[in-house]
Amino acid sequence: MTRERYFFLVFILGVLTALSPFSIDMYLPAFQDIARSLHTTTAKVDLSLSAFFIGLAAGQLIYGPLMDRFGRKRPLYFGLGLYIIASIGCSLARSIDMLVTIRIFQAIGSCAAGVASIAMVRDLFPVENNAKVYALLFLVLGASPLLAPTVGSYLTISFGWQSVFIVLLSIAALILLAGIFTLPESYAPDKNYSLKPGPIIQHFFEVIREPQFYTYAVSGSFTFCGLFAYVAGSPLVFMDVFELSKKQYGWVFAGISIGFIGSSQLNALLLKYFKSEQLVMAALSAQVVLSFVFWFGAIHNWYGLGGTIAMIFMIFCCVGLTNPNTSALSMAPFSRNGGIASALLGTMQLTLGAVTSFFVSFFSSHSAAPMAGIMAISCIVGFLVLLAGRRHIVHKIEVGPSMGSAGH
Image (cartoon, rainbow, N blue to C red):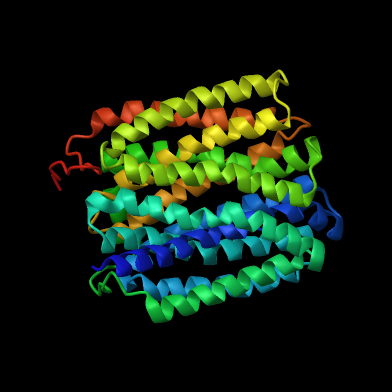
């Protein structure tokens, strides 16, 4: 594979990965406008975010088996088509209940892109390079928190909150065209792959029983919960507590995201010298300490606006190191069942994300403490899962400077 082809594929896969985050981040600055327009509260608008996470989690389980049976592209096209239709529905919503319901279908459509991109990394690139590829995906993915809230704030101010969903469906249409004409089919359809419930359940259990998968998938999912807690809690913290304008909130959101993006790119450099499991342990240890300090300080009102931004920035630097590596280590054992493994990984992350975002809105107060507390607790649980699960990994597949024996 030529260097140009390599980076082109990474870019396309990164754009696929970014569709769901764009669908989340772009409408965050519109929460207050949506609440006024639909005669409800910001907390209830937050339920549309939880609904999106639920739809993403459920959709993963659908697309995993379909992509192992029909290849990656046909289910991807179906998902993008559903996303476009649902986006039109969101723009026409006349009640908060209608918006929450349609967001579930929008999420089910968008998660086809996420499942396909993760599975195709495992299909198209050598396993020892997967963590580096995931880090590059995060560079494209980073455009979402950098651009989406700012773009969303300007769209909302200029054209109303409905315009956000019109722009999102336009992005999905462009992605669909790019997938049809430029993306290769990385996994041949398997006519022998049964879509009956029994065999599908068996395949899921084959993946779940792999110690390397459940250790890093579960640990990484809990660690990633901090990002969901922040996404759900940041409109309240920055616009209600610190009284930032929509535009100011968009710029703060973008600035904090630089830590996440920068550390994910630093990860690609560090992988020349360290293995993924070493980076996960170091970054997660630092994240536990920082999250606890942030929570304790938020309870005692130590931080103003600047201190809150700084603490979240440092925590996300850690997340940018842990997530590409836990994803690569989770997927490494699966040359077969890659679609199901990708689906399970996404389902774990998004189910916990939905629960996390719900609790942030449930415990919402005029303080950053609930958001900080959930970020800290989820991180500590992830660290404990990592410590316990590593003892059960017998045939380890390493990702980093050198490959260990596969044993599979």
